[in-house]
Image (tube, rainbow, N blue to C red; front, side, top):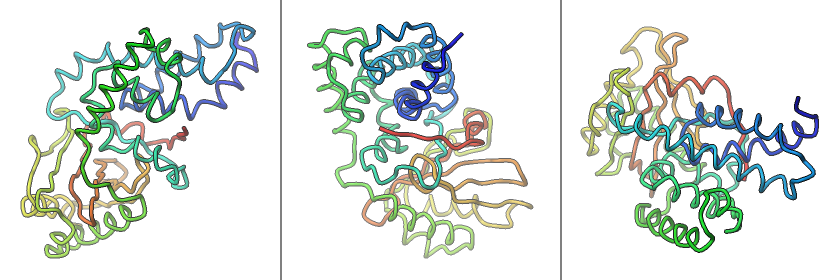
Amino acid sequence: MTTDEHAERFTALRPLLFTIVYEILGSVTESDDVLQDSYLRWAKVDLATVRVTKSYLARLVTRQALNALRAGARRREDYVGVWLPEPLLLDQDDASADVVLTESVSMAMLVVLETLTPDERAVFVLREVFDFGYDDIAEAVGKSVVTVRQVAHRAREHVRARRRRLEPAGPARTARITERFMAAATTGDVEGLLSLLAPDVSWTADHGGKARAARQPVVGAEKVAAYVLELFHVGRLPDSRIEVVNCNNTTALVAYIGDHLESVFLADVVDEKITQFYAIRNPDKLLALATPRQISR
């Protein structure tokens, strides 16, 4: 039986622990599983042996997240189409003022993190986002401190090389551009839509072979605009609607047909232009959108 103190300590740190695991896995449902398993392990720990609860639990969930990431590697290799991280539904008033946290859970950053090895990803997240010491990280990933420093440097350079040269827009600007995009797309305003798109904008859809979607990324403002108008135009399907939500600490669009959630759309905005769309249509990746989560750093 777990004690009240075990439960209290874990619950107090749950938003932070969830955030660590989600950034390592890119999956809300798998993160929930990892936290459940970690909690059961935590419940058996003698609290008298724990010096710092935060460090101990961070190491515990990181080890479990790495196990899950490695176990799921083949599944991702065999995935039909482009694999995108699961969208993370947040309360509208979540901690978007934390710039580091906002960027770290953005779809753009999570896509970059997918290009790292499991160890690189865990080390980068723990060091660059949560500022854990190298000793704690070394214990979490089962490497020496010297090796962890090397991995951290390699991961940092890898991420830096793949991030856009221009800084992405903040949440407020992204919200404004996204809402203008929705207005143009749902009313068939071609010129208004084109004015919001970067010339090399791309549309990437994750369907997993379980939903209709573009099989390959759609690239170029005119092609993306035509695709978007076909997809979003109100009246295309009966009882269809689009709602605005907070996913990954930015404005996202959720498409419904009746009460059935069909898709989630997120956009990257740079210099007042949309540079990238992410469309998550695999129904398995939309299940977690029934409940908003809390994140922290």
